[in-house]
Amino acid sequence: MLSISRFDSGNLYLNDVAILKKFNDNCYKLSLCRSLRIKGFEDNSKKRSRGVNETKLDNNISRARSKVKEYALCNDFQYFITLTLDQKKYDRYSLDVFKKDLSKFINNYNGSHGTKVRYILIPEQHKDGAWHMHGLFSGILDKHLNLNKNGFLEWKQYTKKFGYMSLDFIRDRDKVASYITKYITKDLASSVKDLNAHMYYCSKGLNVAQEIKRGTLSANNIPYDFENDYVKIKFFDNDSIKDSINNI
Image (cartoon, rainbow, N blue to C red):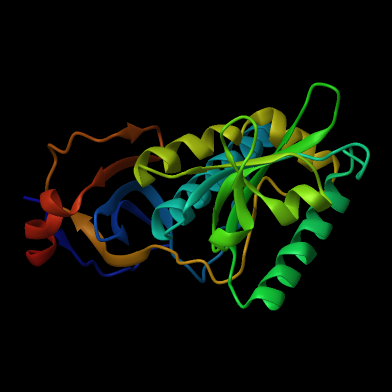
């Protein structure tokens, strides 16, 4: 039985902090943080300089993956999407122009057709330096979709303006949420850093996880899905945690 009790915060850092969050009706996440700084307080202690850049890079990648997975689990996306550029229509090597024009295109589409396209996109660079994007989408009107020669759905307005793209229905939200994070790599992090860009782009107003409880954890026999020197993580479905939630 999972039981989390609240604690009194008297120190700058708290050890073994359990945080329970709800992503959707069938997905909950338990994080056990070995050391967590209390919000509103700064740690002015000196930090070792050795390996700082590498550690910061790893932390940035970890945070980006965590946020992308959270958005994927908390929102009802319909499609897995791949967006490329036709070199006859666009500069395939300018991520900044691609991102800005795509955002404007989606905003115009929403305004013209009275819909609300929601998305999360991760850029990926070809070996020759050209960019394309993978991600999750919802809100495209059915009348604007058709099958292409490869048997995938395509968004006609995008194809006309930018180039080749493909859509596929999401059949398992949990699997696609884990899969999409694999595009966030060290190579991507290094590439976008040089461009002062981001590892992912998303529409405004996406749902995020709700924190249900924060405190100390009584159970010590939980089979965690992931753990390192800083955190242990376990994902639960509704059936396995509903009784525990009632007893927190």
